[in-house]
Image (cartoon, rainbow, N blue to C red; front, side):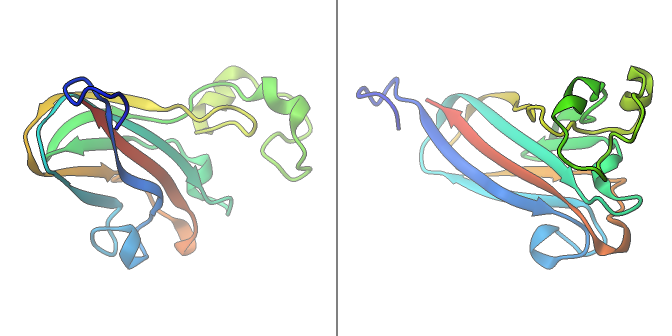
Length: 170
């Protein structure tokens, strides 16, 4: 808790820290074959002005791996869809000069912005966005957070979607 006045102090509640989502590992999915993971949070007291902060990053450099496929990510809180987003969609050319991998995504020739945005869900060297989701006021008790990437494939049982999420409020 930040601040000395309990009425205005900010609470930070970790929900998932550096966890992986895939569809082939029991602890990384709600059900084998499904690309969704649900977390239960128990709030001992009500929280006002609650917000979720979410970071996601797909990994899996194998051919057809999740690292290079832009897919919708659906975020639910208490089984209500709060956000749908598709990571990436921008040119990685500005980062080419910093690339240290000869076998990386850049290849020998520059690519157009439309080429990059059609498949790249992140750029090596770029920041990974932190997504903020306003929830309003939350009652004390159990709540759920769910991440669902319904079309994720995880070809050859490789790759994962790394995620961290925390709740903040007063």
